[in-house]
Length: 291
Ligand code: MN
Image (tube, rainbow, N blue to C red; front, top):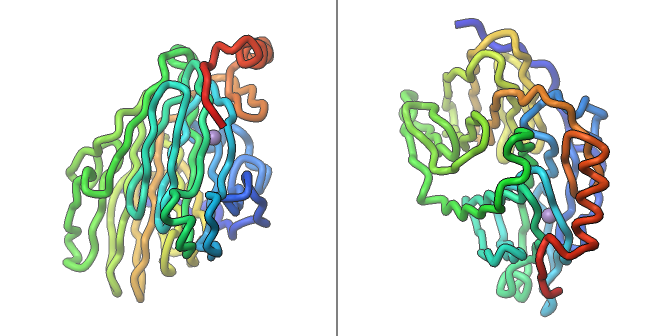
């Protein structure tokens, strides 16, 4: 087994607000001008490192907006988010939960702090990943998967002090509940103090690890909290350790190898498809959602 070398360890770029509810750093594609296909099928990663929100009656968030051609996957590490979309799906995710929304042919949605969380205020810690869809699946019907923390198989690691929760694909001998449109592995590793995770990510899969909590060492590179590690495709093996404990979000996927044309909330393959998406939004083809 050849270890993957560490291509980059990225500190969170300067934050910006998405609506008034998400204070995010964009790791890719824009934060570091990473080529749009470098981490395909993953297109975008916005990370909201822990931030304190004061109590407020009217929930903060981002109002009604469209998406087409990809999936939004929202990870809640702390705090709660409520979601509503024009396909009729809604849900609330809290600590450890994941919301996997396939926009595909098109939805309107809105994302707000959950009412009670907004009232009490507190620490808010999230990530949103955009997973691009293969051309042949971009116009599928929208789909919504609410994946609670307890829905993910928990695997005890051989070090006796660490665990892995499997969200998608097969790894650590378990299979995650998320349905995906292309081969993807996603897992959350919780390293205990002095813990170690030894695993493989399939050859050629684009792979990245977000350090959600604590400091880790990944394939010999220091990986501080809130940093993103990009692994090269020159091997398969990954060894992650932590002196004081850490939580890692591991993302690995088979590249789509298709042209990408992205504009705002649309990720398509051609300029004509972007134009069509805008016309379809104007024509009301993404449905209706109250603000
Ligand atoms: Mn959105």
